[in-house]
Image (cartoon, rainbow over all chains, first blue to last red; front, side):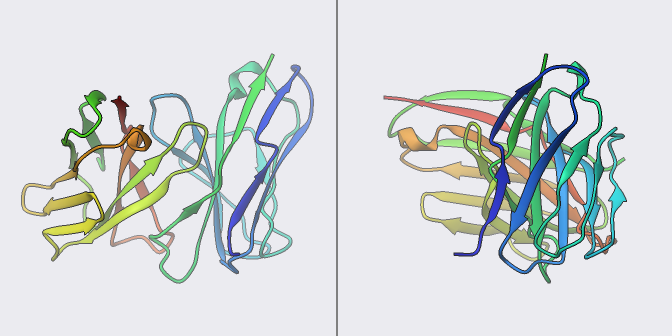
Length: 112
Length: 114
């Protein structure tokens, strides 16, 4: 079944740790996105990719980095996590209709 | 500035009742408007999509309307169920973007009580 997956779903870590949030999709979509969402607030685009070897920064400045080595995989990395990084991170992808984005279940990150 | 405003911020209704959620936007040039449902701890799921020429679109108990002249949309939920408890997010895309640039509202948090 075509879908978009994120792991882990929940993560609690200490300050200074390096973390990688995984995102994979089986829909063959070229475009992928990372959003950050705080409770009661709108989604903010932090990274996106048009395809393999393409990565761009979004509207919201983020200390995270992304890579796109394979079409189906778009991991997000924080080299040194801080409490200000506590948030929900949502991954999405889109195909030929780039306005229709399919979202993963999200990763809830808490940095102590 | 492209913006999407939703009201009310939160809403509590009894099971079986109807409700209407509002969305006002200033996104230009307009491409389409989607309503998403986001359950707690989950990603948003698309309910309806409306283009410039569409006034009304239904998806089961969900009916969305669009007035492109006043830049307003509404989502009407009929005969609410407990499973309707979620955040409903209005998302507008602009026609000028090749990326798929989306503008998100903050959502209306709907709670349905038995």
